[in-house]
Amino acid sequence: MRPASLTASPTDDEAFARVIYQTHGTALLEFARGLTLGDVHGAEDIVQEAVLRAWRHADRLTSTPGLTRPWLFTVVRRLAIDAYRTRRARPMDLVPKALEREVVADTSELTLTAQVLVRALTDLDRPHREVLVHRYCLDHSIEDTAAELNLPAGTVKSRSSHALRALRRALASHGAASPAGLR
Image 1 (cartoon, one colour):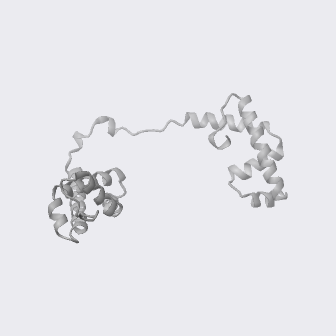
Image 2: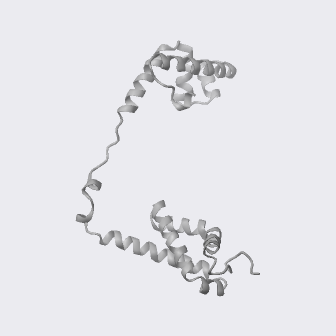
């Protein structure tokens, strides 16, 4: 019986591909990502095609130890070059008109959420509002907030907890659900 390495039987398709992915998949994917300038999906497609080609040449790859990895890297490099050339050769008039339009994000939901949050914050008493602003808006640590507000760290922790509960109630009174970070 052969070891479960690259000497898997070419007829055992799934096992051969699994061994290739386990042995070389991560390195091939990183190499392909570099060649595709960080395009993860393009890199995954290239690696998948390289493994398919390795499977087609399994008999040659399993009979020659040490050939598989360099062969796979060569295939990935050539596939990346082919993909690049294909993208460059494609005439612009073949690009669908929908892709030419610039996509603009709809920020109205974020704006409304920010307005409701500001109103809810104004409903809080000043000590609670100050702690929340320092901790979550200014992203200060408990220690930094305590130093800035001249309070003990335990008071900042306690006040933060009470302030978050009060903010949840204020948001509910304004008809808004609590944001994910406040649950």
